[in-house]
Image 1 (cartoon, rainbow, N blue to C red):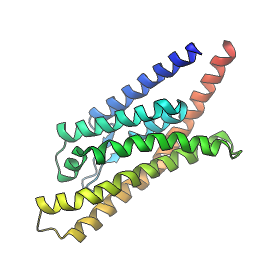
Image 2 (tube, rainbow, N blue to C red; image 1 turned 45 degrees about the horizontal axis):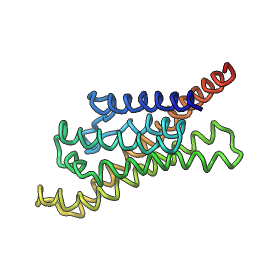
Image 3 (tube, helix red, strand yellow; image 1 turned 60 degrees about the vertical axis):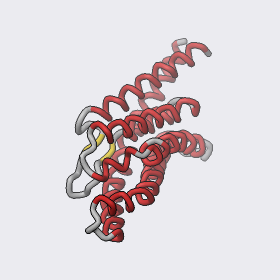
Image 4 (cartoon, one colour; image 1 turned 30 degrees about the vertical axis):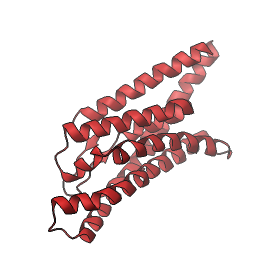
Length: 201
């Protein structure tokens, strides 16, 4: 029992370190796409992997690390009004905590359906990153429309809303494809390694 707890804490530290590294190394976790106005975010990948692999009690921690890193990056590296929106914890932090918890819960739910583990990993990770998009886009619309309109009053609010939705949805579709493609084999490898370790002890 103690060995498993230590193992979980080690993996929690590893996943948290990956999230922090990807957040602050340019072009590693956030890939800016100038013509879309929103970056492709790859950080949900280690969050999904860690949340599914570890217990529920650790999933929210990974989401919190992701959210706090996003908040810090918006202050340290933010260059556009869009980046400034993530200085609001209701945009940058809270959605990421909920997203990480949902990733774990999706896996638990689909594990009971009798699907192959590979399919369970793929579906859970895809649903998790889809939830991440929805959880972030709602406060972005709520807080962003007024913020952008105040900074750039010549832009009609409706135009902002349409432009933001198009940009975010295009980016989200890329994330919906990439996350399951990366998370599924990683989770299979971790599951296999864990099984081998349990057999040895």
